[in-house]
Every structure is written in structure tokens, then in C-alpha cells.
Image (cartoon, rainbow, N blue to C red; front, side, top):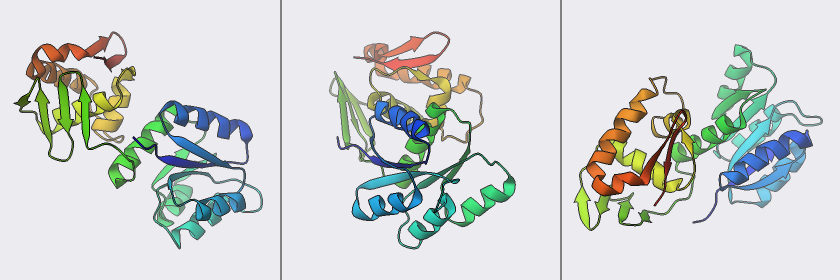
Length: 224
């Protein structure tokens, strides 16, 4: 599977490294720019960039200028990072076509969750149409799940949940992260809804439901 490429733009090298490390850990390719001018140069030379994480406060050319320039030519998803968190700043970002606005300090894990949610929503993320793990097969285009050769009937959310588990095989996933991805990051429901859906999904999967492991006090992990 090809990796989505993310451009991280920040004049602070420590911040770039922090974001880069978490993105790489989540199977993204990352390119870096230390200022706005370098960011534009990289972006226009590399058509494979799927999303930009852009700091607002930078010398010479700030994030707003970079965003305005990119939006005049491209609708690539943009996440703005800023030390400011006023309503006026957020409105300015959204008026410029920013997809997400995150105030510093932030959780790198949540940032990665937002990146993945935006790529899923925009269809910019690259993914295989068919996922297979042991006796489990998921056809994401046809929306069909077969287990040991037999088709099983899943609800829409159960299908998305199983797909997300299989795409993150072997990774411990907290309930909050699962909510971010399967129910969308702005879902404010009770995290126990995850447990209910996992219970139903396991039941429908029969013996293969044992692939969804419970991590007590945290969430779940899919292993075959």
C-alpha cells in the first residue's frame, strides 16, 4: 500500500521532529519545510503531497500567506497549528479554506487522528480496496465481509469498525482514537458505544471475533 505524503511546515525544528515522528509511526511519508517560502517550493515541486500541516507564526512568510497562496491553486487539505486560539483566528483560518485548526500545545496522537480523519473524509488517503487477515476478507468498494468463505451481514458502523481494526492490525487503539476515526473526530458520544459495537461485531464474526483483543483500561487491538 502506498503511503500518503504529509508536508510539515514549522520554523521550530523540535516541533517538526515531534510531528514527523508520530506521523511516520502511523505509516505516513513526511517532508519538512522550515519556513513558508520553502513550503511553497516543495509543494509545487511534489504533486504527491496529500495534506499540509502548517504553522501560523513563521518569519518572512507566515502560515496565512502560505495558505492563501496554496488555496489560489489547490484544494489540498490543510491543518493549521497556532499558539493563538481566539475565535477571530479560527474564523480567519476557515475563511481561507483551512480544513482543521489546532491550537498549541496539542496531543500529537490527536493531531495524527485528525490527519487520518481528514484524509478519509476527502478521499485523499490511499488504501487497498480489499483487506485480508487470516480467514477474514473485507471488500471496501463492494462493502462485503466474508469470513471463512461465508458472507456476514454487518451494519454500516460495524463494517467501518472492522475495516479500521484491520487497517491498524497489531496496533493498540484507545476508545477515543476509535471514536475519532469511525464516528468522526468531532463525535462527543459516550465511549462505551465502542464496547457495544465491538460486542455485536464479535458475535457476528463467530470464532474469528477472537481476533479483536480487549486491552483493559484502554481499548482494543486486532491480531490474527
